[in-house]
Image 1 (cartoon, rainbow, N blue to C red):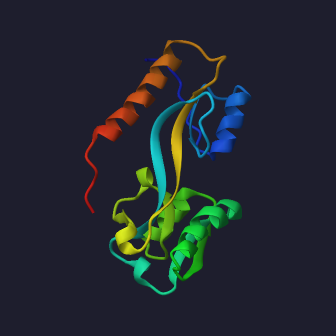
Image 2: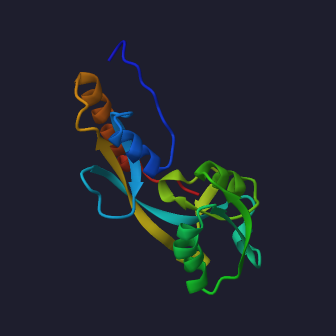
Length: 175
């Protein structure tokens, strides 16, 4: 659609949903760990441990890890997944964002919990063959403001949906 203004807001899922409820957004795409309420599931996306293919930090003892500053999720899921496998670890890096975790991994500072769909180039998932495994799982869900209408919003919603369909139909990158 020509002459359409698009504003993208990158934020945590809770902030996106609050903005949608306040009428600040027409559409939002968020990660949901519970059953999605009222949204359209675009894909299922597990959170996995990720390492650099160059630095092999997962082979260090104790393994250096990068974590979100949000301690609740990290303790309940990421750290628990290491403890269940009796893996010695040390927190080497903390960040508020996934971008920070990706930086820690790509630069060889640590391994990190990252959504499978968001694994950076030059990195790979640590699998059960490596002694690791999935941490938790979420759904990527699109929500639409019920008060938002129009061709432009319909078109954007279709484009987002199509982008996820195309992403899922592409073969996985080899590492």
